[in-house]
Length: 519
Figure 1 (cartoon, helix red, strand yellow):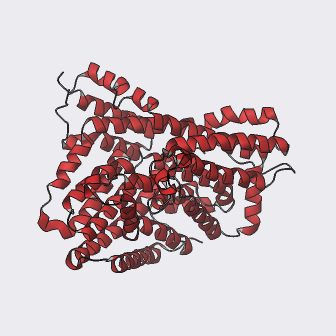
Figure 2 (tube, helix red, strand yellow):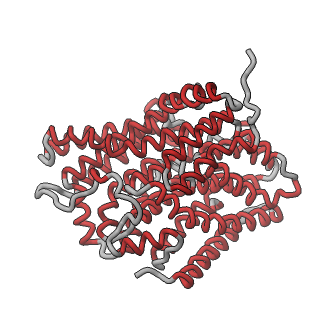
Figure 3 (cartoon, rainbow, N blue to C red):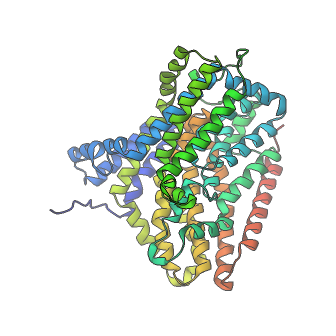
C-alpha cells in the first residue's frame, strides 16, 4: 500500500504551525486559541487543503492526532503525575503546612534577594527531572516569594531557569539518559562519558544559572519583567489579568498542629520516591547498574509512581498527626484536579501541535538543512548548530526531540574530530534547552507557569528577553570555542567559558547602569 505524504513534507512550511501558534499567543496574550490555530494549520497542510481529511487528522491520526496525544503512555503518566502532585499541594495548603513553612521562612529569609536566592538553590537541588522541578519548587517557594513581594512572573522565570538548564548538566537525571542514548552506536562512543564531557561547554545552561544570580544580587530587571517587579513592590503580584488558580492560593492562617515538617517530609518522600521509581523502571532492582538504570529509565512512569506513593504516605502522615480528617483529605482530590485543568489542557494541545509538526517532516527539513553546510565552515558550526537548535526547539516546544534529531547529524559531521564533536554536541544540547526555555508551547514552560501560578503568556513574555540575552552571549561563546577547538584540537572550555561568563556579567552591569536597580 502506498504511504501518504503531504506535498509540504520536509519543506520550510513544515515549521509554519508552531510559528502561527507562537505569534498568535504573544500577539493576543491568549494561548488556547493560538495552540488550536497552530494545530488546524498543521492539519490543513498535512491534508493538502482537504478539510475533511484535516479534521480527521487533527483528531484521530495515529501518529499525531489529539487522541494519540491523550493515549500515549508517557503523556498519560505525566498528566497523572501532575494531578497527583497538585492534589498533594492542595492537601499541604488545606493542612496549613505551606502557610507554616511560609511563616518559618519569613523569620529566616528577611529580604527579596534572599527569597529569590532560596528559590534558585532549591531548584538547583532538584535535578532529577524538569517537570518535577517546576511543580515542586513552585508549590514550596510561592508563599515565601509572595511574602517578599516577588512577582509571579519572576518566580516563574526562576523556576523555569532551574529546570531544564540544571537537568542538562546533571549526570543523574532523565536528561542525561536521553542524551546518552542519542549518540549513534556506530560512533563507538560511550554516550554517558560524552554527556559528562559536554557539561563545561554548555554555555547556555551555565550562563542561565549565572544570569539568575547576577540579576538577583544586582537587583536588575529589564523588559516586561521590570513592570511586573515594580508592580509587585506595590503589592500587585500578577500585573495583568486575574490571579490564576485562586482556589489553590495559600491561606496565611494555619492551625496550631500545622508544622513545617508536614511539608518537608512529603517533599523529601517525593524526591526519594521519584528517584526510586525511575531506578525501578530502568531495571535497577533486576541487576542493572545505577548508571544504566537511569539511562534506561522511563522518567514519566517513575515520577507517576513516586507521586502516587508520596500521596499515600502523606495521607497516612496527616491522619496519624490529625492534621486533616479523612473527608478533608479526600476533598483535596477534586480540588487538585480542578486547579490543574488549565495547564493540562495547554499540555495536551502542545503535544498535538508537536504531532502535526512531526507529520509534516520538520525534523527531516532541519536534518537536510544542517547536513548541507560545507566543511570549510566547521569552525563556525558550533555557533550555527546552537542557533538552529534554538530555532527548532522554540518552534516545536521540545528539547528532547531537538537533540535527538541534531546529535546524529553532528556525529556525522565531526566523526574524526573528537574535540569539535564534544563542543558541537554541547552546542546542540544548549540550543535545545534555550529554545525550550523560550517557547510558549514547551511543556517545561507550561509547568513553570503552573508551578508559579502565573499567567502563562505573562511568563513567556517576561522570560524571553532574559533568555535571548543569555543566548546571544552563549552564541559568542560557541563562536570562540569553535575557533579554538578547530585550530588547537584540544580542550578550550577553560578559555571560552570564562570569557562567556565575563561577557554576560558585563552585559548585565551595562543594563543595570542603563535601567537602574530596583529597591
